[in-house]
Length: 231
Length: 357
Image (cartoon, rainbow over all chains, first blue to last red; front, side, top):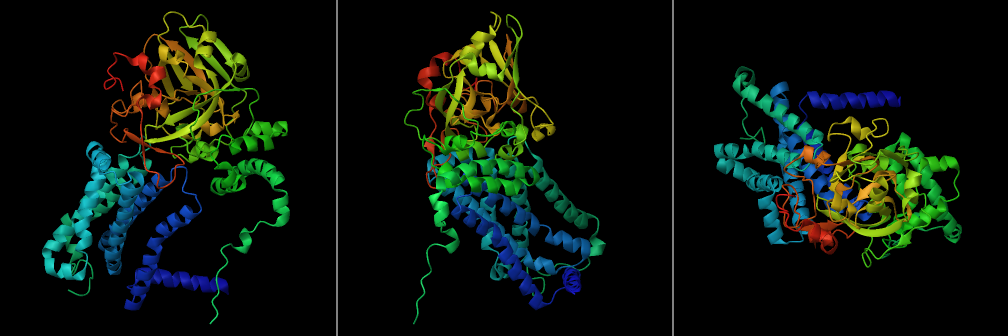
């Protein structure tokens, strides 16, 4: 009995992935993704109250928020390749929310760095940014992400139109800087940053491939970068 | 209107009276619980890690006082069978003398010292060594003495314990990554071991070679560093009274994750100079090329003296975070030679420390 039920559930979930979900389903998915992306923050707060953030809690928070910012960014960058590969486009509607969540974790990352790590010592912070390439590229990624967050609303999309698209291509630069920022952090064991570099390269490769060689298969142009439906 | 105020303590958090009354016995049992935990860890490292920290109790371990809980647990584990000794943790060291080193320093908690380790042979994440080193066997152990010596020798760890009176040395430890600890090491002056080793007049440097056993050390299977881990000192540095061969910390034998059964401690140098689980000591006439020099010649030099004036490409060296100081403690200024200029400064007179970093 319960087996049948779960089979049905699995099927309906799969169906949701294959067929375009209804408007109502999409808002459900959005709420789910919203709550899901808050889990890393909830975990940090929980571990903080348990005094379980390792021997070096500041580093732990910096690593965690940095990881989730990069992870969410890479997830955001998979939405379009999925569309290119499968022709399904509904998931692109999650792009703005995920992008803003990336920015949210970047902000937590920066606040931790400025407040907890350097206690607002601006002289030391400036020195740290200027003297350490890995901090510099991370800081550059943060600065570049600010205009994208500011122009993420519908009014700005309407106002900027083509220029909005150009501006938001900065996300690729941000992703590359983010991976480099992580790569230069690790002393010797580059396996993890290498993994993200490979994922990013694949995601970029799919885009470039479709742009250069497979124009015929994408005869449905993207009407609106974010909403997909209203233009 | 009924206003219900929530109790500020959960019923599950209230210690039953019988447990409270037997709390000392409970702490003793917790020591044994740790043994059980280390066995459980074999099957499930993640769960076991939380289990052992749970049984230890952060209140006891995190106290950060000289009376540290490590000793408490060491006592709790004292009457163990030979099998338990083979498992290893918390063997109390009998008969060492206290010294004035580090007087007034607030010790980093036993828990932090033993769970936050850079020991790539057991994994590159700092939490990994405490988990992955559980099966490591620090005994029986011998150290071979080679190179520019009167004759090659081998010394067992038990004989090494008797080579010179053991002393407790409370030293600051500054990691190149910008964090620091204060650790109550137990060991013997390296100079005593060198005296016993009888180097000849060609010996200008001393090289320390760590164990690299892929069976016991999972990290060795990954070529992150050129194994075995190799470190080195100039002869005069090695003879400096500050340099010790540590065999213990917090009153007990070195935990595996801290470099059991013996490691180098040179508190005026960055932490990576402290080679762990040393199996070979070689006296040479040429400057040894260390593992980290091979890994990043622009980042890690032979001397690796703590120096706030020489920047590192990745980490700020002018300030540091003291482990255990809390989320809002900020940074403390890093001192030249980690604050040991008086003892070691004269060795580097005339040496360009910017070039010889």
